[in-house]
Length: 489
Image (cartoon, rainbow, N blue to C red):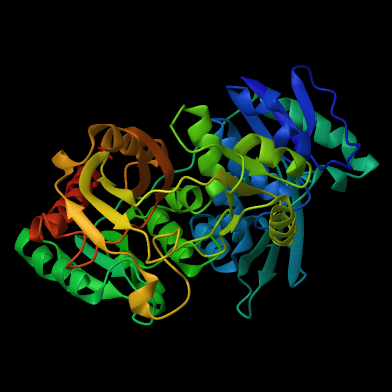
């Protein structure tokens, strides 16, 4: 497996290790050599993992390319959250007290390089912290409370550019040992209870499930022997009471929905949407790389960045659609008809993200939405375009004018090629609950995107299966809970 160490474009950092390649971050993101490379392990030493920064995209697209990034995007998010930092460190609190017991300051920071620390008296902290976060180089900060107990307060990445000359020899030594040495085992927790929580937001304007549908889950859960309780963001501390978590609120990476998923997964709950799914599904750049690599049929698509704007029209033509990487409900998308409009739209997009999506405009009367759960088709809907609009949702005007009609059909009557392509695309993401947006253009299926928390609304998606739709979803949770109890999941 190739080993790639990704550094910032301005970094002159060198590491003399055979078979290890130092790659500037922008080159890794845009050079076809790395886009097509297989079986690579990527060590991300960029100076920032801030959301939608270069460092963030290095880890995100490494996953899309089938590479193994350290840190992963989930680890990046964990490091940014103080509550998650404290949560994931609970299992090693005793070690912290033992190792830091003789430190007489109220605050303490330590650098960890490839799982190792410089001072021998703190050497046990290195593998423990790496086991929690799996970042190549990090600075961990601790704080002592009023009772004299140490807590992990924060973890920050150390970039390649942060290695001073006096540290270079030590870092090179431990890096060599790391690449040829031991792996760290991270124990997994197991669930012990048999209840299910549904996270929802009573104030959300366009939730993935209406309240009638949520009550269906509660009622049908009773008949299947699973207690279903609706919870809100205020119930974060209660997650350990449940056996499963079903997120029925619009998910984002920079959001408490992700923290709920991450916390639940760490507690051993069965989770839909799981945190990895949230990371993957809420970024269209990830979709573009993943679909291209796996030959999933899509409209002509290009990942846009500041260096290839002049190539967009030749690649996808006009008109075309400019999409932010993390937009939902069609927000932030724009249709451009000229080069002037394109330049204006891309200039605006680059203010908030390093990468974005440009896709050819493929007009159809309706989009297909194929619901998938546990890698099998669940429902099929035709989402018609909003009146006098090119999208299924028009983000202006009255509510009646904002949405096109929804027409649900039996899965077996939907075009086979559409269903097959939808299942194939969703299975690349995971085995949760997905809604795959598709177009059928003259008998040719095209995948637009995979949504991680598709609509399940009473009166719409359940029009064909009725109560069986809710039962089928709940049965997946029950099956997985039982598998975890047997230790087979």
